[in-house]
Amino acid sequence: MATAKHEKFLLDSERVAFDLKHRATISFNMSKYYAAVDKGRLRYNSFQLARKRAANLKRQALSGLDSYLLQFEKIFTKNGGIVLWAKDTEEAISYVSDILKKNNAKIVVKSKSMTTEEIHFNEALEKQGIESIETDLGEYIVQLAGERPYHIVTPAMHKSKEDVAILFNEKFGMPIKSTPEEMTALARKNLRTKYLSAEVGITGANFIVADMGAFAVTENEGNALMSTSFPKIHIAIAGIEKVIPSIKNLSLMWPHLALNGTGQAISTYNTLFSGPKRTNDVDGPEQQYIILLDNGRTDLYAKSYQNQALSCIRCGACLNACPIYKNIGGYTYETTYQGPIGTVISPHYNGIKEHKHLTMACSLCGNCSEVCPVKVPLHNLILNMRSIMVENNYAPIAERVAMKSYASILRKCSRMDMVGGGVKNSFMKLFASSLWGKYRSLPTFSAQSFRKQWKRK
Image 1 (cartoon, rainbow, N blue to C red):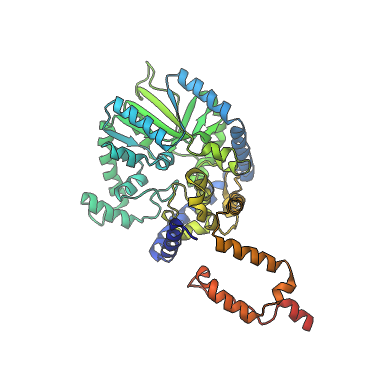
Image 2: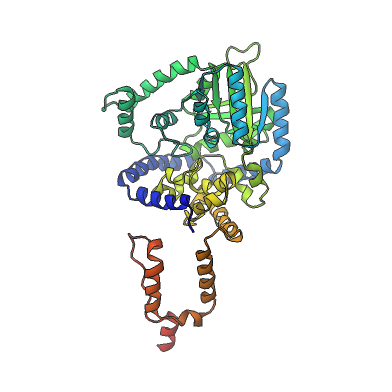
């Protein structure tokens, strides 16, 4: 029997797939991405070699995950930073709450971080009466709209400039005909006052650099730098899988992330944080924390094949390549991480039984695996997840019985030929029409099988 989540997923998928305005907006925004990435790949002497090296690097980092994390902790702590290990969402939020209470913080400025979305950071702080303001323009827009990020890299991808103009008119009284430049200027003005009044700045981390005891933050707007320069306290929240062995690896990983995320040669701002402000530093936070989040990652790490998904660098390339994501959109998944990578990791982070339906939201075309910059075999991992569902009897009883019967019939041609085309067509209309969809015609079986026709002729 389908779960409530599954039923909602199917209904939302059908609604969004036939929303022509949504499809036009996504197609337009993604076309800009495709053009930029195609152009960007020409800068590489061998893009495939870069993928191979990046994949090997991330697999190496995962193979020594514990030692690299401890190396990072030792050096970062020596530099005056504080490392906190969080096993789950509750522990991560508890750490943040303690720091905010200790420093009597009332306003937090936050630079885009999918890890904070994963732990429902803003909602948790709101319950405590603390204002958490998104400072990335895309995140700022979806926060104003009362929404969550639609996409890993471009959180407001589903909105056109006209949609944003209507939103800014409702929230700030801006003219409907305002240009993107005018709306950006207003957002900048509003956020500047928040940077100056916030006690705490929050970021994620794109990479944790073991041999330097530092973490790297990549951005294009300068909002992360503002969020970490003005407030006296900086808290970074990062998944434990973000570690890389050496600072030398950034010469490959920074441009590789930029190309596959946005098509750029390199992102506008790439910053390394290695502890709080030193005596001779002009600016920077007086306290710097990093919360290393597990939240299901060690469980995934223990799975010898599935753990390749932890190599993901959150570039969003697989989402942009996925025909399912492009049709049903980011919100239909109802998970922090959408698309192919979300289909693989969300069941491990949030419960396999609750997210089993996501494994069927895939055509197994393999396009996600083709574009992944660190060569994660995403479509094979999704297929493997389907096997896990079957092995654990997560499929409905009726489906299991039907598949066993189907397999038994397919094993012998004589069994297939026992039933004529008329019976098969009637069976399909009765049981398969709802699965096939009301917008498509069911395939028609001929009166006789090909084998019988061949023998007769």
